Amino acid sequence: MDRQKKRPTAPTATPPSATAPASTAPPTTAPPATAPAPAPAAPPTPAAPRSATALAAAALAVLLPLAAACGTERADGAGSPGGGGPGAASAAPPATVTGVHWGVDDVTADGTTHRAPGAWLRIDPDGAVAGSTGCNGFGARARVDGSRVRLSDILLTKRACASVPVAVEHSLVGALTDGPVTATAPGPGRLTLTTADGDTVRLSERSEASLYGTEWEVTDPGGTTARLTFDRAGGTVAGRLPCNRVSATATVRAGRITLGVPRTTRMMCEGSLMAAEKRILRLFEGRADYRIDQDTLTLTREDGTFVRAVAVR
Image (cartoon, rainbow, N blue to C red; front, side, top):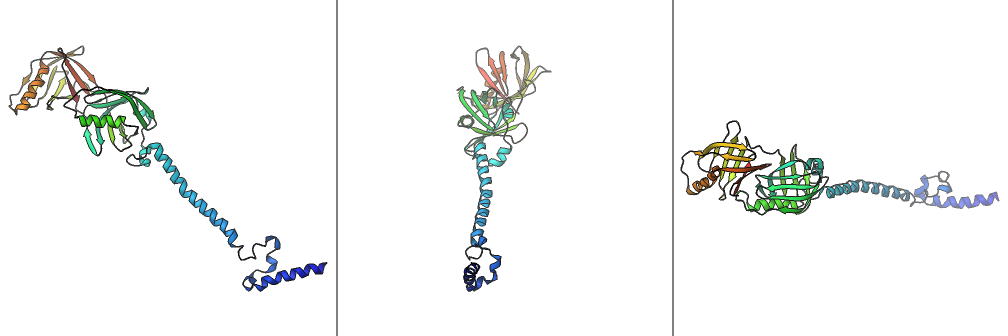
């Protein structure tokens, strides 16, 4: 029986020696239990799984950051200027957006930037919205979710104001109401609202303007402006009309302003300027109720006509 075992072993050892290139691997170092090594195809077989594993790991290393980046971009509102990274880092939290009186610095729509004097926006923590385009007031409801803000149910008055072009009002109202906007804070007391199309509304934190010491800009229906400043200590109002300088006494009591007879310089200007000046001087005839709403001063005369002035910041 022992001889029969040796005979099969001898013929088995003969074929490996017949394949001369594999003679470097002695029969004694390749036991039958780990026989895959003697065959020429065996070495590539273990190597292939290692290469596949390495490639899979490399692929995951590349794909995982890309997937994370895509997730961040969607969460922060893809398409906003500056990309998801910087915008996400400076996204204003809800506490910064709500409970603050924001004055509108400018509106950029379709690549055109418009100044928006007198425009403002306030979002209360309960979602109530109040604001002004500088001419028309509006109210709405707001939903604030992180850096995402969506306004709905907007109600807007429909006055025509020479001081605020219709294009500015349309750009501002459109940017705020066409869809959700992304809020970012480029600096302390600053806020930028960016639409999905890349239009922006830039705002600054502001306190309510004071009647005294503020330069108020009055715009005539024809588009000409005058600037007036009330002085508490002197009990006066003074400023520049479309052509001349003006001053008068100003008595303020219980929400009313009584202006004295105006004193003006005597320059002569182009006809339209002189006509606008006469219309503005009518403010100095009698008493007017006044109301300040953040940056807007409204003077309502006893006959019901009113004039609005905007604080110059």
